[in-house]
Image (cartoon, rainbow, N blue to C red; front, side):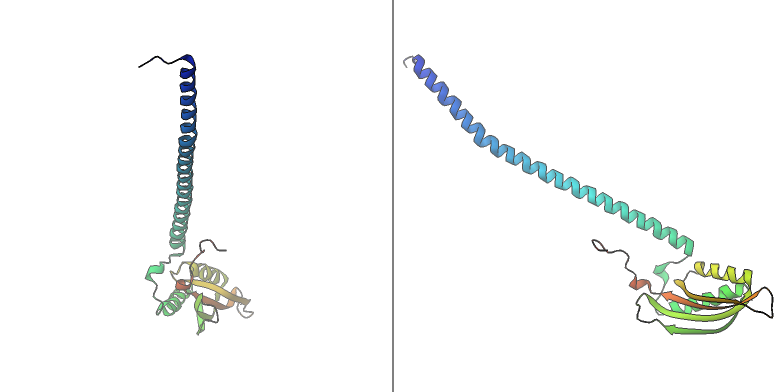
Amino acid sequence: MRALSASERRTIRIAAILLAGYLVLFYGSQGIRTLEARRTAFEARRAEAAGLALEIQTEKTKAARYAKLRERMRIDPGTLRPETVVGEASASIQKAAQVFGIQLGPTKESPAGASSKEIAVIQIEGQGSVASAKGFLQALRTTGQPLVIDSIHVKAIPQSPGQVQMTLGIAVLNFAAWKGPQKGGA
């Protein structure tokens, strides 16, 4: 093999540099695109993980609130049966009235109106001392039944000082209709 002249060596060096430059540009741009795609996928997974962590935290908060509400109101929706909840609610109202010395008058149960968040409305009349009435109203929160006082009318009995007459409208809630906040909605 003969020795290459200086101009031939220079031409080969220039060709090698151009070929190397072409390969770097061609494969380098593909490498950069591949790395960018991986980085984008990583960022998407990281954002998804952050969203899931936030959703888990939200669910934990809901569970803690639910447990606190169950403890405070002594309601366990798992034990409530839709077919007996109105009767059980009426019985627990009468028991609370008996404990606090409220004399109940007529009790009227009527089905709920257009709202599907209620099963029935119980209207009761009763009378007792002011302290008994206050204790009775507070005890309704802890009966273990899904009750909400819808309306209340209290008036003093003129013939008996310290005695009041109450008329209550108590809604029995339908827990099956309460779904809680919907995802992505208002």
